[in-house]
Image 1 (cartoon, rainbow, N blue to C red):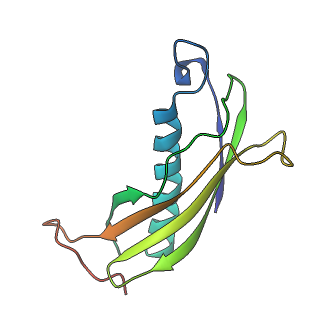
Image 2: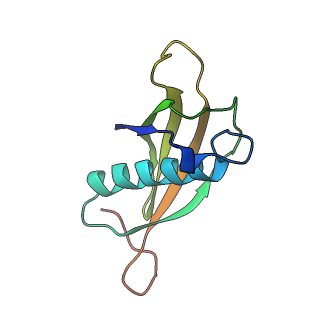
Length: 115
């Protein structure tokens, strides 16, 4: 799955660069949507991100492309590989990449099978 985000002034820190936390929220949301579409009968919660390392800064007006792909499936969990690119510079290396993991839970918050 792929989605785009436009970096707006409210997404910037005091130095004029994209807040890292804002990017993490967008990545989590994009992967959660992918998991929810792949497993529409499940309720997912985020359990972790493999590694958080930003490769370079992002300025206002940048159009980000967030690409997520299912990498692993367990009994109650699923993980998605995600990479973030500058949409206007597709040949550049990713700005960010990680593995995001989710667990399926029931209404009481207990783990539940995804199949």
